[in-house]
Image 1 (cartoon, rainbow, N blue to C red):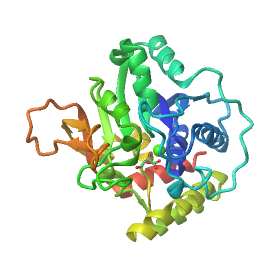
Image 2 (cartoon, rainbow, N blue to C red):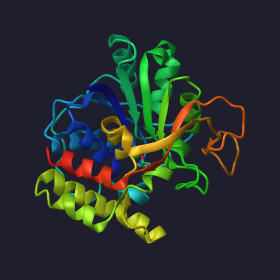
Image 3 (tube, protein in one colour):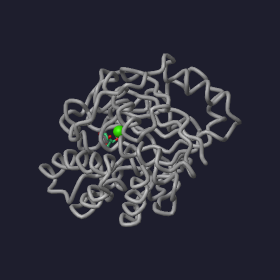
Amino acid sequence: PRKIIIDTDPGQDDAVAILLALASPEEIEVLGITAVAGNVPLELTAKNARIVCELAGRPEIRVFAGCDTPLARPLVTAEHVHGKTGLDGPDLPDPAMPLQDTHAVDFIVETLRAEPPGTVTLCPLGPLTNIATALARAPDIANRIAEIVLMGGAYFEVGNITPTAEFNIYVDPEAAAQVFASGVPLTVMPLDVTHKALVTGPRNDAFRALGTPVGRAVAEMTDFFERFDKDKYGSLGAPLHDPCVTAYLIEPEIFTGRHINVEIETTAELTLGMTVADWWGVTSRAPNATFMGDLDADRFFALLTDRLARL
Ligand code: BDR
Ligand code: CA
């Protein structure tokens, strides 16, 4: 299996991404989960990550708390999407498992230095503050990271938190700029892909029909999560942004994209946090990311439902 660290701000869709990873031990070994401030403040994301591990029946997974503020800006949260707790929808118990004492950034650095080079993949599902801080503090780890597979950004779909920016990149554009300039191989799941991974009614029914606590919780989480996009865009269902990252690790053929240059806007007022993606190759800037553009949604949901049934 691929060894991964999940860096996350749960978030209902983060929760589903974590559940998918934990349900797939043949392909994915979760070395640890690092929480970052994003959808809700750090205290809640660190708690929610543990709630999800316990829901999956995996209380031995180590969860670490990381950065509570973006590198250079005040935190912007998304309770309007995810609810006050970040995990509104199901009624899940407070976690009994402990939060680790080590800071998430130290865990990331120590793990990358301890494991053989090129064997650990980082999976950021929130703002990139922890990852950028680790790279800045320990530049030697850049060469040791196998790949960073992240959810963030947008091109044709443009933005969801401002007209031109996706939430994860917008919250900490300086961190994103550092990660995109790091030279580490990047695979990016932008809104162009995730807005096609929609939990339609029948797909939600399929989660519920699993008849397990996990199936019910995922149905309730996506029900709650859906109301935001529905009210706003008349969407067909909740977009499962973050699970695209863990699905990619299991069945990369579900996704198609291009290896292109992507730069992060960090100074402009109107377009702060925009992922300037050279999809058509109109600049001579070197490619730094595989930027996905499409997915096979039926195959994605078949995989997800099949794996959730195992928990
Ligand atoms: C991203 O922002 C968060 O609200 C979601 O969890 C996802 O990571 C989508 O823009
Ligand atoms: Ca997230």
